[in-house]
Amino acid sequence: MKGFLKALLYRPVSLISVIVLILLYLMMIFAEFIAPYSPGTSFPDKSFHPPAVSWYSSGLGFGPQVQERAVINEITWKYARIKGSSQRVKFFVKGEPYKLWGLIPMERHLFGMEDPDTPVFLMGSDNLGRDLFSRILYGSRISLTIGFIGIAISMTLAITFGGLAGFYGGRVDWLIMRFSEFFILVPGLYLILFLRSILSRGMTSGQSYMVITVILSFVGWPGSARLIRGMVHSIKREDFISNAVLEGIPTLKIIFRQIIPQMSSIIIVSIALGIPGFILGETVLSYLGLGIVDPAVSWGSLINREISTLSNLRNFPWFLIPGLFLLVTTLAFNFLGDLLRDYLDPYHSDKGGLR
Image 1 (cartoon, rainbow, N blue to C red):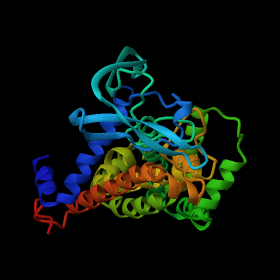
Image 2 (cartoon, rainbow, N blue to C red):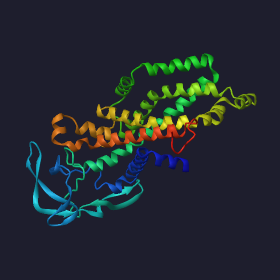
Image 3 (cartoon, helix red, strand yellow):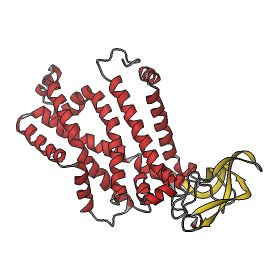
Image 4 (tube, rainbow, N blue to C red):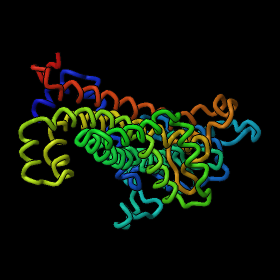
């Protein structure tokens, strides 16, 4: 652990990535508390409202505050500030009741307004007057977890099939590798779209989430399986594996308890680098309208609903914020994966400097 922390200090970008990921997942865990509103809360007269939090006004001085705005053009949704109408943003303020983690009834939010008719749009609102920041926080629960669930299923398939192919060789190897090549040769995006389109469009949000996760897992396992197959084929020739076979230990137990631990570093790196692929896969499906649908929300569905035309993007640039969250998360995982790849490389003698 100390060596890994030392390696982080030598890699400032990786250190920042780890901090960003920790903050994102903390925000996801405490989304109900941090978000001032639920994802479905709407202010019908505040559609396309720009970010409204400022840090200074002549009346209130310095500090987070909201100055009320009024619509001056309902065609282009232009807003104008109302002079002298600033109100301070309150912390740990009472707001919409909720259940933290679905268990603990609470009313306190990290920040908000005492006047319920004056919303605090930290990152603006959408076409229905819903707070974009709150929706991003709730959407992170799908976008930030689908990668871990998907990679768990994918790596289980890859270890099982790749391990069996490498351990037995011969016809078993040939059949498994030809089966995996079917998924590799078919363009992944088109296969995902085909599998998702033939399923029912009337599924609930939970069903859609699980279906998308399974589809992405089945598309993502072949590449890792080929890598694991090659390593198992090499490790199985070691004496301790031959002894285990002679003792009559079941094949799967040999693969999972004796061979796989020998390649744990490769698997850890594959997991870190594979998670962004699942996040982007869900985003593509949701952007194309085949993923998460209302009332559930994900970063991909936010991009789909808000960035529908170039005029929306030009007039309401804050609709790009979910895409920025997605970009930052993907880059953070990639930088973390690069660090782990170098740190776990047995040929690096200097684990701190990562020469």
